[in-house]
Amino acid sequence: MTPMATGPVIPDFGTVSPCVRDNGLFCADWFAANWSSVFWPALAQHVRLTVIAVGIGFALAFALALLAHFRRWLVRPLGGLASFLYTIPPLALFTLLVPVTGLSVLTAEIALVAYTLMVLFKSTLAGLAEVPEAVRRAGLGMGLTRREILVRIELPLALPAIVSGLRVATVTTISVVEIAAFIIDQGLGSPIIQGLQSPFNTQFIGAGLLAVALALAADGLIVLAGRLLTPWATMRRSA
Amino acid sequence: MNSAADIVFDEATKTYPGSVRPALDALSLTVPAGEICVLLGSSGCGKTTALTLVNRLTELTGGDIRIDGTSIREQDVIALRRGIGYVIQQAGLFPHLTIAQNIATVPQVLGWPKPRIEDRVRELLELVGLPHGEYGDRYPAQLSGGQQQRVGIARALAADPPIMLMDEPFGALDPVTREHMQDEFLRLHAQVRKTTLFVSHDIDEAVRMGDRIAVLAEGGKLLQYDTPERILHAPADDYVARFVGTDRGLKALTLRRLSDLTLEPYAGGANGTALRADDSLRTALSALLAAGADRLPVTDADGHPVGTVTVDLIREAA
Ligand SMILES: Nc1ncnc2c1ncn2[C@@H]1O[C@H](COP(=O)(O)OP(=O)(O)O)[C@@H](O)[C@H]1O
Ligand SMILES: [Mg+2]
Image (tube, rainbow over all chains, first blue to last red; front, side, top):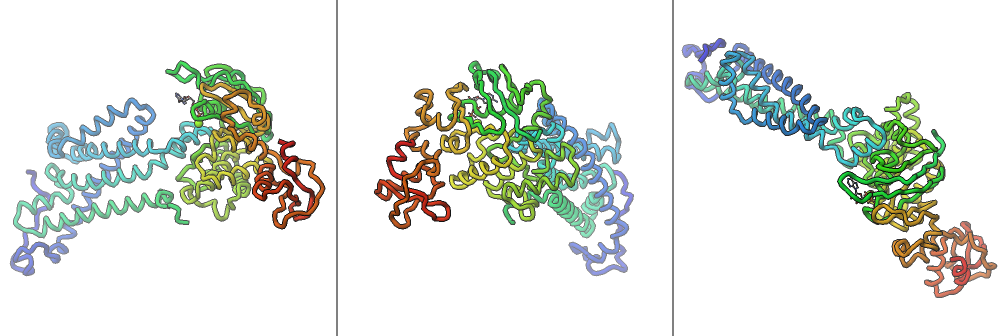
């Protein structure tokens, strides 16, 4: 294992609270005292790793899905490749990459991006194909070009599917980033791994709770953004 | 481009790939500018094929179709379609766009200035009886089936195309709404006078809507192309006669109104059983039979007496 840069703060048993002395499940005072030195940096790193992975993953998957949408014969090979990447266990993928790209953020991001591809590719493709036949026919019949149909009809109608793909990809990535702590000392995985190794509870429980909260918050934000982008999807004969 | 155009089918033929028999077999007919032509026939006899050949959603494999003398083969397919209104059974409204945005689609891609588009949308919503203030900002899912179909028609009219193609536009509606929409469309057509190809498998609808009816049979063969009166009174063969139905004598009565007859002089009559001059002969006959009478008084819309109708008069007119 690599040495941990954000060194674990071994409690000074002389001046601490009873909770810390008895190694309670979760000591709020210790959590607060170590927020700025341990938890906040780990949380910020976690968010950054996730955003980069989902961002690049989405850009790639979106481009590939568009390509497959227009060149249908690509659907199977591209879908198969994305599914294959998804079936490799995260630790195995990290291990495979380390000899090539080292114990680096790059290694972590490559693996993280690989994991997002399948769900984002498939949800985007499915969303584009979801346009009802009558709607597509009406669009063609009124003289919209292929491109206008894509931009005006298919992409907006694919949004709900894309949003649900993004939700799954983001929540999955947030948990895989925790595993990335085995190769890089970043994210909420670091304090969790250290906390598991040391007998002090608050460190890994606090980091674990933060990871859960982060996943919930990210999911909620995406749902909210989706609602704002697709007001028609939630409106059903309400007026 | 605003005036109507005539449509000429010249031996128009479509054989789908992998099929030996044509789906539409050398169809030749002319739809005069401004008229409604109903393509009538049972399922699978090539009505949709004939319709979509015109806007090239289906490509001809033989013969030609000309609009105002110009072959559709010679026109850019996108420009051709933008000059043709297309209405389908399920309306096919874009679910993510508001009613106003749906109607604005073709004017937008044609690059109309915004104020002109807004005026046009307002005008069309008014025309199909859905005031902009109440309906413009709704989404299609918030409308009934009949209302959605009105929007479908308004959207097809948006760029004021000279031609309308309508593929069983009221086929998915309940009978009452369907009849209402048929009347509405006839009223609207009287205003806009688009050359209209209208697909139907319903003889009653065809008789109501069509200036002319083209009866198609299995294999895309044209059996008869005629006015509703001629189709009902003089079916070209047994197939047409069967399709038109054994009650074609009664159906023919729906085409004529009491005001078309030379009535006998008004002579009073049973209270409250007076017919109106704009009632059809079918309604009149039904009323005569129901009243067990052989003559009934007829009034105008305001209740002023105009004459008397008799069973004999109807028999002579039929
Ligand atoms: N895209 C297609 N490919 C192959 N055959 C088709 C296609 N569309 C229609 N057909 C066939 O052509 C015939 C006429 O179909 P259609 O024009 O849809 O009839 P209608 O509208 O009168 O019900 C049918 O036998 C149908 O199966
Ligand atoms: Mg059809």
